[in-house]
Image 1: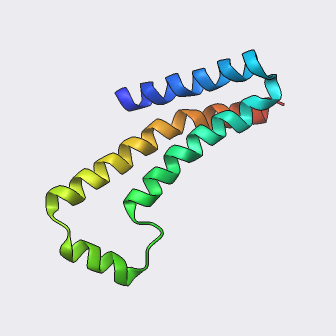
Image 2: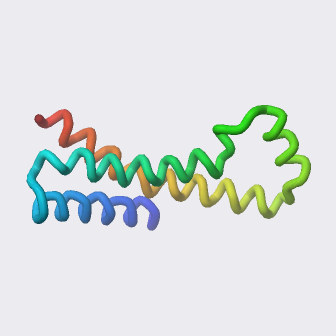
Length: 95
């Protein structure tokens, strides 16, 4: 729950910064950039971009604690990115 709140705070901060510095047209790039940044971290840590051979090698050499920690960080960073993507979609659909 706290990761969704952190993501909501970052999304609101992105909206506020875009209103104060630029104009309403910059809300979508800023909030989607924040969201895609955290989704990229989640994708990299989850191992989406590696081949099956490399994934098998990583699973064979990685400890259970390390894998659980990596998966937890991946899940939490995805939770932080979700509110920013939702805000960007709402602003996009409202225009």
